[in-house]
Amino acid sequence: MQIVNRHKELYVLCALVIMTLVFAVSYLLPRKYESSSTVFIEKNVISELVKGITVTPSMDDTINVLTYAITSRALLTKAMESLDLNLGKEGNSEELIKELQKNITVKVKEKNNLFIISFVHSDPRISRDFVNTLVRLYIEQNTSSKRGESYDATKFLSEQISAFNVKLQKAENDLNDYKRDKGGVISIDEGKLFEEINLAQQKLYDLELRRRQLEGMRQVTRTANDPLQSKLVTLQKRLDDLRVQYTDSYPEVLTVKGDIETVKEQLKARKGGAPQPLDPQELAKIESEVTALKNAESGLKRYIAQNKQILQSIPSAKAGLAKLEVERENQKKIYDQLYSRHSQSEVSKQMEVQDKSTTFRIVDPAVLPEKPSSPNRIMIMLVGILGGFAGALAFLLLRDQMDGSVKTPDFVKSLGVPVLAVVPRVLDAQQALKQRRKTVKVFVAGTLYFLLLLAFPAMELMDLPYMDRLLDHFHAASQLVK
Image (cartoon, rainbow, N blue to C red; front, side, top):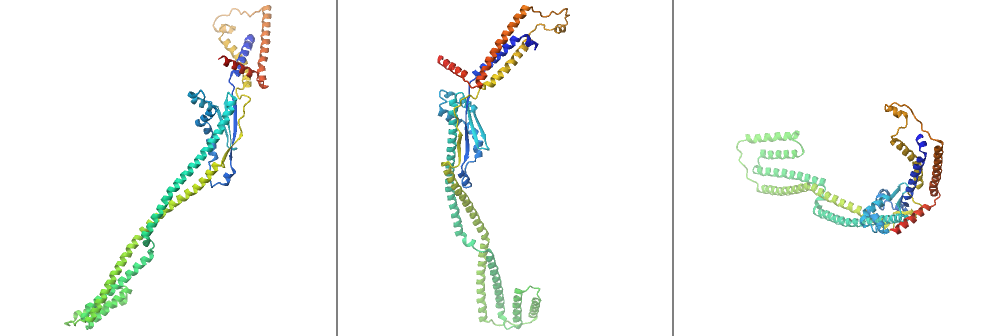
């Protein structure tokens, strides 16, 4: 406060100079005008009615890429060419695009499906026209891209349906050919075939048993009148019959075996006994039956072998059939899915063509801004007033710190020099009166000048564009001079 009191005139002058500079800067800063347009992403009622039948783009996906899509290089280039912003700047198009991207602001309100596009420019008309053009181009591009995607999807599905139709027909033909080739084997019941094989084997066993009996009888026809030999044949036949039904441990089987052994012992013990002459009629009958039995056995063996081969081939034939059926079903399933998707794609395409899905509705188009959005002159001026007082004080403190003259006796004492006397500052009355008059003049002039400065923020508050008009005239005159 002592420093300010000693240098009151300098403090006021510095404060007013700083305020003047800040006020001048507030008017010299380029004016920026901001225009904005509000767009509502509206989902058509038809989309809900055909939900599950059609496939439409997700609204969340559209909102997520909204900022990147609007500020994309391709879209901004189209907007520049539409408004001729790139005239005379062909070499600096990249810098112009970066400047446009920096001045574009996209605010998304996901809950309300709204997005606001703002653009700042020194020309209010360009600001308005650029926002409206950008919104229009984005809506057209979004609509055309969705239509193109729908057409491409329908075309792709049609091509895939044709390709899978060929594959399905091939699978059907392979399956039918296989059925014609292996149909006889596939249609056979394995259980019944196994049963028939068992029956044939049992019948073969019976035939072999009968043939052995006849062959045994053929050997004994030479001694048909021998009682022991006849008894042995009868017992042997009886034993064979019993073995068909019972095991060797059955009591009657054991008894017959014992009798056979007894007869054999008697035949061995008997001396002499010349063979009897053959019975030709009986022998021919036995030979004929033996031959018939051998033929029947041979046929049964071929029948059994053939059925066993068929039985072994049934699993592989059925496995091949199952594989072809699975292949046919897979191809048919894919074909049916593609056909269903193709129908959905057709409906989706019609919805996109007729704009029946997601609709962009411009709620609030950009209008010509009347007031600049920046700079905020009132705020700058208020800051300039406060900065003037603070800056002047900082200047005085800095000046005082840089002043190397002795100001207090303590400073001299700190140097180790003895202080003999202190002479106070003395001003005569005439000089004091002259100083006071000078101070009063400075304060009066400073106050008037400060009041003049306050007129500028007052004009801004009252929205009086006198200074803007003056600056516009000055700018136009400078352009004419150039």
